[in-house]
Image 1 (cartoon, helix red, strand yellow):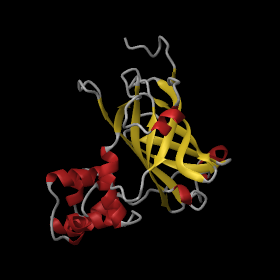
Image 2: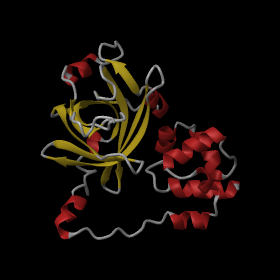
Image 3: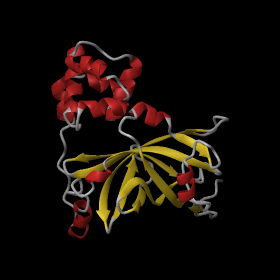
Length: 266
């Protein structure tokens, strides 16, 4: 069991940019993670769940025969896109060189119909994967009365178009909607703050489409992934924990949302 787990974990890690980055994203100690890779130890149930969730694989699969595990995850040949759509598939290729200075982690801020009067703070990570710039976004929020518990993860691709960052994401579950974000630096040579617009669907029961301003703030490299994720959630618009510059860039406008009889709950 221990040998199968370590081999399967090494197989998954071979697809990541670095072990150190993987440890930061999961929130595990590098020395502890190396024990799992070498077969010198097995993770606790809690850490196993975190590892499985990070790689998006069932926990039980991590202990299966390594040959079967690898065979089940060999990339399938993608169907050829119809000619009119081919430009969409190639539009995100070879973007890492162009967007290299934007790679890293950010806290994203925006308002949403799900959390009226509050600002949602998310965690976004941009990285280079074979020349593509991929995004991984985490949303974590919970109401005080426990009636809403928002926990979402999105994966996407980023491309530069006309000096703007264009991000298209989809949630890891099969039923969530695609979201689109277009960003620009506040100033051409300053990338600590990015501002733009996001188009998405609210997490509330009525699933309203909405558009709103968004601001991304670059996270210092010394900040751990665990600390960055722990900082996600909702903030009151007048909270002293909300960066005054973020508050100014977001403005006072409410999210633009579609309200109709078709979207009203029955």
